[in-house]
Length: 295
Image (cartoon, rainbow, N blue to C red; front, side):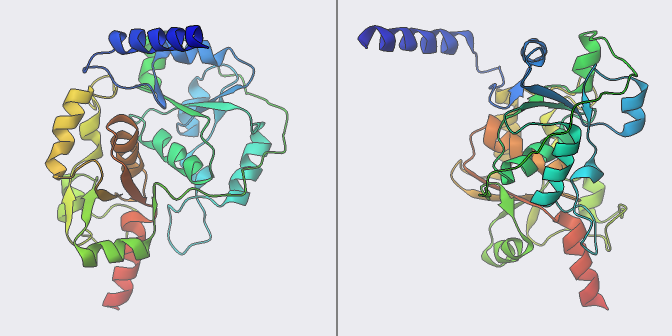
């Protein structure tokens, strides 16, 4: 028993020694070498989360296409809400995803879309998920062969566990209480959206949630470059502007809960913040009810 403990301890020490403060932790975020190694396993599915037009122009062999509209619940009078459990189970079954599979997800938006899928799956207690740092930019840089052949996987009978996980979830009612209580509310949209200079498609009025502060989600990545995640040191400096401690509750939102899902990912998985809640409906839902008040 002692020898096993010693071996484990040595392994942990070696792992710690190999990491520097400049490196991003590898919890749900992986690099290209790990991506290539995992992709060879039978219990792994690659999820290409780009628009269908981009996917059809070239994708990794056997990769599965999913897009934002596939994981939205369209029963609401406004867009952007996360898909229901039944909707996702039907989708995953059709796509040939097994409950035991690990999903390797990437997009071409700096992982904002991929993080939204990560967030939705967390809600349904599905945690076998990895995001490729840099997304499709990394795939291209690594010169991974692409194909235009259709990927076909046998249908399955996918199901989630019976329990949901609200660890990273916030509802409109929770945001209303957060506003009343003066909680930390983070707007992860662009400056123009925050200031009400533009009205994005789907929203009903311009503006922002009261008492929210702005921190564009894209600050966390090399947005104009390889779209990879910035170093932990850089991220700590960026998000220190929030003025929050690691145990504080932070509410995040954007236009439809996509970009704010990425910020939720960064704060919780890379920086260790304990209580970060992504507002699912975000500005689309909030603005829908604001318009109702103006009528």
